[in-house]
Amino acid sequence: MTRTAAPKTRRRTTLIGWSFILPNFLGFAALTLVPVVAALALSFMEWDSYSTPEWVGLANFERMWNNATFWVALRNTCYYAIGHIPLTLVAALGFAMLLNRPLRGVGLFRTALFFPYVTSLVAVAVVWNMLFSPDLGPVNQFLRGIGVENPPGWTTSSDWAMPAVILTSVWRDMGYYMVLYLAGLQTIPAELYEAAKVDGAGRWARFWNITLPSLRPTTFFVVIMLTISSFKVFDLVQVMTEGGPGRSTLVLSQLIFREGITQGRFGYSSAISMVLFVVVLLVTLIQFRLQQRSER
Image (cartoon, one colour):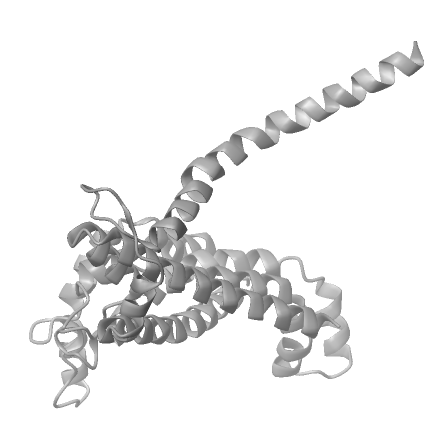
């Protein structure tokens, strides 16, 4: 009885396990895996969604290599990521440390900082466009009030449009990552800080030697998530500047959208999306490598 019951128990356990995994795997396969494989195949073809796909080999990649707009979009995407990742990281950590104290109304402040993340992105973009208005916007009125004679044109200036997008994005995202840092801060034992105080360690020494090392797993997760979201940014830029003025805020996701959906060049847009995928994959692998090296 025992020998026949054991395989049945194992089979039942296996089926229960598959019943949990299968819905998620089917969703992943239908919504992620199949589109990625289809995009990879399309990157070697010419297809406008009306005619039969035509095999063109590496022609799409060669065209992309010789296209100045692609390099502008790649440079702008890196510019956005380099600004968005560290600023969001520092703002989220700073607010998390500030709101990890027993302050009156701390729950209200936490909610207020998290609220932009769940607000409609279109509403956020429209409001910040009004705030950044060169003539009537409160930002420039404040700058003039403190003595800045020629404040930036923000979204109407090719030099300041990307910083305006980055600042808006940081304001929207920092609340979400602040919550992650708050969770990380509350796992640090208070005894470590008390022992450090007894040894005479100041605030900076406690932050550098206790807080930052203890938050290393949280920071690694935040950096990975910020990297992925930064390189695939689309909606905020599309609503705020539509890639302009000129091509000053054009990012790779917008170029993929324009070439594929607007121009009907799905093969070429798939080739660009493959390059974006490889860039994000390489940056993520480098971060994993650095994380493993720091843990040794």
